[in-house]
Image 1 (cartoon, one colour):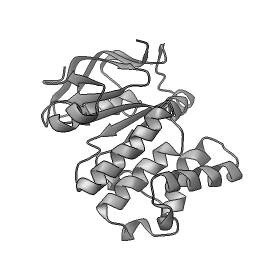
Image 2: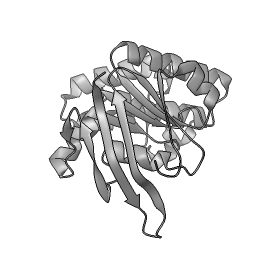
Image 3: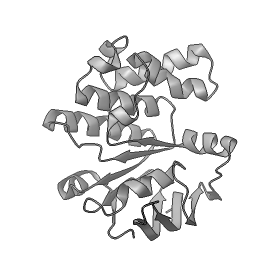
Amino acid sequence: MTAILHAEGLCHVFADGTTALDGADLAVPAGQRLAVLGPNGAGKSTLLLHLNGTLRPGAGTVYVAGAPGRYDRAGLAAWRGRVGLVLQEPDHQLFAPTVAEDVSFGPLNQGLPEGEVRRRVHATLEALRIEGLTDRAVTELSFGQRKRVALAGIVAMRPAVLVLDEPTAGLDHHGVVHLLAVLDRLVADGTTVVFATHDADLVTAWADTAALFAHGR
């Protein structure tokens, strides 16, 4: 099966000397729902931050569609247009005053015409069932709503790979069911989904493939 994204031998040591990745490998099959499963502190979040170029490894390589990821401005823009990352905490990702402005940011940075941006924002908010929040201030939203808005901002960019860090954390049962339904539709449309979790039940119920992660590997 073709890997749309491939991390090979990634090593990452933080400034305080903590080793987060120690020769980590991960192949992401195209069109799959891949879970990265492991306990808190195993290095899952650090790995995800490497998959879209947010962090640069001390050693090792991330391959995007078979080519090494580039860390110059143009390379990172292309990489992040292809691999979208949704953080565990939506407040680390949301920054615009209103929902519409936040979801518009990524497509506008892709250089899309304003009409296409408006169309994408509307379609994405509708798909996530939050179109009623279009003009709401981000600061007025509940945690679950902010989580969906953060997802919408990435989905509106139409990435080939969607990377999510603990996507169900903090959501109630209804929120989890709705989120997975949205992700199922994205996968059906050809999106590859990578998600980090420590919830083995979620992996059993929803993932196609799982990578077990511990001690930075």
